[in-house]
Amino acid sequence: MPKQSKNLTSSEGTLIDLDAEFRESNIQEVLDKLDRELIGLIPVKTRIRETAALLLVDRVRKQMGLSAGAPSLHMCFTGNPGTGKTTVALRMAEILHRLGYVREGHLVSVTRDDLVGQYIGHTAPKTKEVIKKAMGGVLFIDEAYYLYKPENERDYGAESIEILLQTMENNREDLVVILAGYKDRMDKFFHSNPGMRSRIAHHIDFPDYGPDELVAIANLMLESQNYCFSSAGEEAFGKYIRLRMKSEHFANARSVRNALDRARLRQANRLFSGTKKSLSKTDLITLEAEDILASRVFLESALDSEPNTKNKK
Image 1 (cartoon, rainbow, N blue to C red):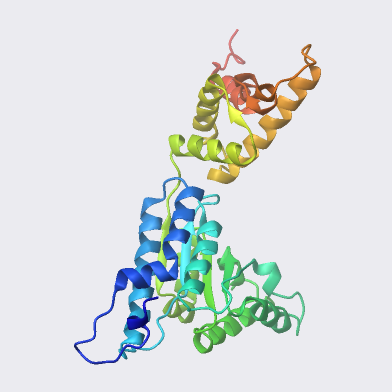
Image 2: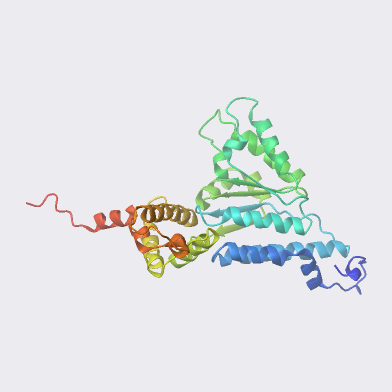
């Protein structure tokens, strides 16, 4: 940071080099990392950049004596599984740390089971222990709507919510809470918990990936594991993705990762069972079309497309 921006006064004539502040914070490094890690998600990345810009300007305002109080940074990420919510939360923690809004910048990811006990007196210690671990960083609560179960009078989720609300209000300069889950369920959760809704300032929706984006994600995942598709293999994976997106329990990038794990198993079996005993590096790293086309997704699709002749004479 340039010396002139360290000793700022509140006088109207004082100037500050915002670009220098930006470079000094190294935020661009985090944003670049986010671009490398996640395909697409342009609206999400735009919101993260906007939030980073807001925090940078807020820090400069404080240096100029223009304090407006600590901004509310608690967030809600909504979207289907496998759309990058946890990865974005991790990078958000880095940005908050580099700008001095949290002390350590670590991410603690939990679900209801980590916060809510099964008997009287168990929930408060569990929730407080999680908060203690997350203090100075970001607490990411996945499927947060499961904390609230009004149909069960003996459920202790409400106790956990009450502790979280107090912490989010009283320790917002040392902890950022990010709630995550399906949009419709989170909307219902906020409707039933107005106290929680009032403490969440930033709502970011994560769209599903398109088929071409999912193929690009697959290529990134394979590259990180020293694998690659052959041209025919990539074409087969594109067909696989389009079929898999229509089936139940599709989870975007998570389903891609699972599909690649199974393809690697088939590739290993193909190499082990084949007649070729001397293998090259290319053999070892390449997923071929047959490693993809052996998926049951293609078999199920073929069965679905067959005419029903069961009742024909």
